Amino acid sequence: MAPPLVIWDDRMMEYDLGGQHPLHPLRLELTWKLARGLGVLDGVELHSPRPADDPTLCTVHTPAYVAAVREASIHGGPTRLIGHGLGTDDNPVFENMHDLAALIAGGSVEAALAIANGRTDRAINLAGGLHHAMPDHASGFCIYNDAALAITAMLDAGVKKIAYVDVDVHHGDGVHAAFYNDPRVLTVSLHESPHTLWPGTGYPGEYGRGPAAGTAVNIPVPAGASDAVWLRAFHAVVPGIVTAFRPEVLVTQHGADTHREDPLADLLVTVDGQLTVHRALRALAEKAAGGRWLALGGGGYALVRVVPRSWTHLLATVLDRDLDPRTPVPADWTADAVSARPAISPPIDMTDGAPEGATYEPWDGSPDLPGDRWISEVRRLVYPLHGLDPHDPRD
Image 1: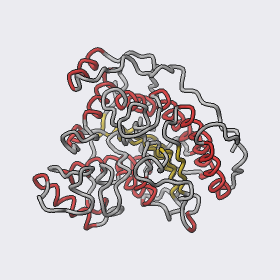
Image 2: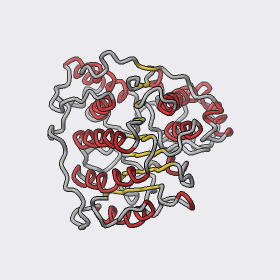
Image 3: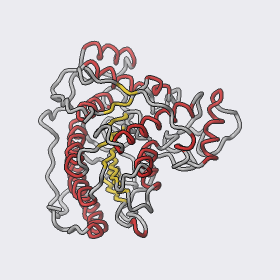
């Protein structure tokens, strides 16, 4: 089998919402520099994709929306109100927006088809994971929903069942909505409670409709959740439900905004906790999906101290080049980080202090920690629909 397919084109960093917008391309620039500096990409050929064409984009998005994105892209967009969620503070228009968003989407689609057609078992697109975009409007910094487009492309290529696991701090609402009525796709989102964080969706009771009942799984965790709470929720639901679904491919979204330093959310997860989940999802792909795994980036707004380390660990995980968390960051990377953001003290190594791995107590059915009631509610609603015992911690 061919080595993992790593999607990248430097033009993806031109997907730049401008000014002080949180989704800044520096997070990608520093990630690739760190991965290269640590040897993660030694000998790895990066694949530059083609932009997704209109017929591909319109498998998820409406033609009117694609046309609006293209119109808004000309010279940064017209001054009149565009609609479709474009031209807002969250989703400002910028020159070549359509082409750049289509390039990112094309990367995820090409990666997905490489897996579906048997050319590789694993692929990764760090610029992807733009999971909030809806069929007819931009949302949450996301123009085209590359994750939904990738899943749709695999379905159209003959893949019968796909599981999508989203560990971004925000509910993966765009992917959830795209497949809410489709029993072929299991969407699982682990996110901060919609009581306290945008977009205000992703309750356990939103679990799919009709023949797709049970194939939308939402696991909220409370604001202030630490590694112990977040990992407990992940392991109490995700491996069991994905394994029971028996997907042919696992697609994962790895937003790094669960971190305790992220400015847009309220969780207290560490880089070590995120690494623990990266590796857990790799193991789950091997166990439940025959090793077929597409990993995507996502959110993450601590541009210097968090995203580069978390996603370098993710690249290493996909490539089976695991890094010791005690590994120091290279001096030249530190210099680049200080030059880019002089006011931010860069990290000194690849851990937040738990190099042996973040720890948690497995859920045993008792409501001992914040968030346990959500675990029990998710399992009560969804597990029986997959033939699982909601009360048995072994399931």
